[in-house]
Length: 101
Image 1 (cartoon, rainbow, N blue to C red):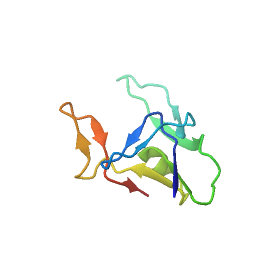
Image 2 (tube, rainbow, N blue to C red):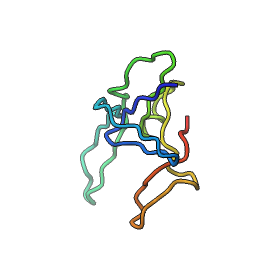
Image 3 (cartoon, one colour):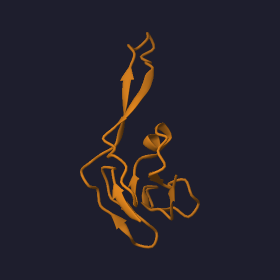
Image 4 (tube, rainbow, N blue to C red):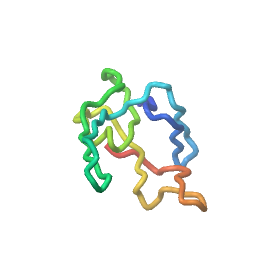
């Protein structure tokens, strides 16, 4: 299986495998309402942008937001909520054990 990283940062697996960013970033478009008197606005998620066309034998690594906004079976996201995710002393993710689909 070929994995293509469509996020803006390297994805590091617990086994040391690293997927470098490709420069092609998949994102979900978003629009915002005007803020109310309390300074709160609404956001509405739109279409997924920047996701390449499907290629047999390829999985695209995307953010969890893109994964949740798209019904394709060729995309995965890092399993950042998994109990085996490794974090540094500041709580930042160092590596993940798996992908989720």
